[in-house]
Amino acid sequence: MNVTFDYRDTVALVTGSGSGIGRASALAFATAGADVAVADISETAGRASVELIRSAGGSAEFFPVDVADPDSAERLIAAIVARYGKLDIAHNNAGVEGVHEPLADIPVEDWRRVIDVDLSSVFYCMRAEIPVMVAQGGGVIVNTASASGLIGGYGLGAYTAAKHGVIGLTRAAALDYGERNIRINAVCPGPIDTPFISGLPTEQLDRLTLNSGMVRLGQAEEIAQAVLWLCSPGASFVTGHPMAVDGGVVVGGFGTR
Ligand code: NAD
Image 1 (cartoon, protein in one colour):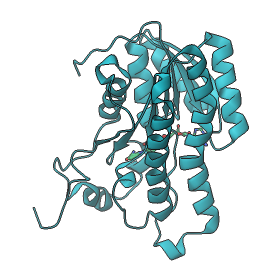
Image 2: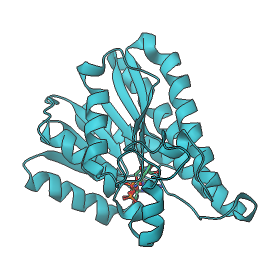
Image 3: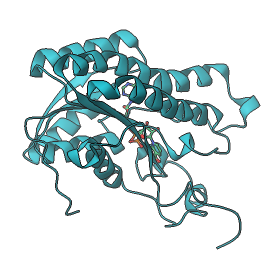
Image 4: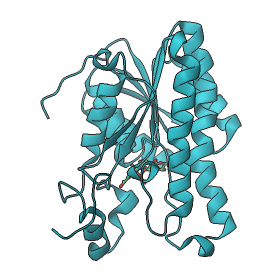
């Protein structure tokens, strides 16, 4: 991809950057000159991303976090500020999918885990990030929601509810902090070729894109490019926006191709 961004003198946090979309976002920010805080629950995966970024000439450090734990989120932000003295950008991205079951068959434990990791985590992270950004005079946040935050998905009740919630939190926070020079948006990926969905049978993967415009899976780098744009001066008047980057999944409709 030829789009270039300039993120020199910028500290960017990406949660869930041990894999998939988060790894691609962390690599893209580092390639554009940012100091990247790679945060993940998996130390092995996080350190592998740091190695990848450093071998590409970028700057990155690993920070352990369980985003579903508010104390862990607080410790993460404190550690980043202690290390770099500021936090310019936060991409709150870590997430899990949960079971694929019709609503009444979703175990309560699974519901709680998905809501904790996918929704409450965004609240915990923003709650820790925003005071730092207010104190330093501004910042930018992008939360990874999903096409499932904009439309329903079969057998994905907890995930769909959590991702709709991420968009609601994003809108509320954007209103609360726009005057403090903090822009807060969400990116809504369609089906992206990462370990998150790569275990699904081919037939199920095909069905994910059948009613979309582009009829293919997206690549993690295509989400990273949207995140970098949302954080850039080019998006200086964009806030509270759930940006679909989905190959046309959410505009998919009835009928056959
Ligand atoms: P992935 O499984 O490749 O990566 C997720 C990363 O998050 C992993 O490194 C994992 O260790 C980390 N993580 C999980 N729980 C965590 C926790 N409690 N604390 C900290 N880190 C944790 O998945 P991905 O496809 O890169 O997904 C990233 C985000 O994109 C998720 O929020 C997901 O819901 C969203 N998303 C993905 C797709 C897709 O098709 N891949 C589509 C829409 C939205």
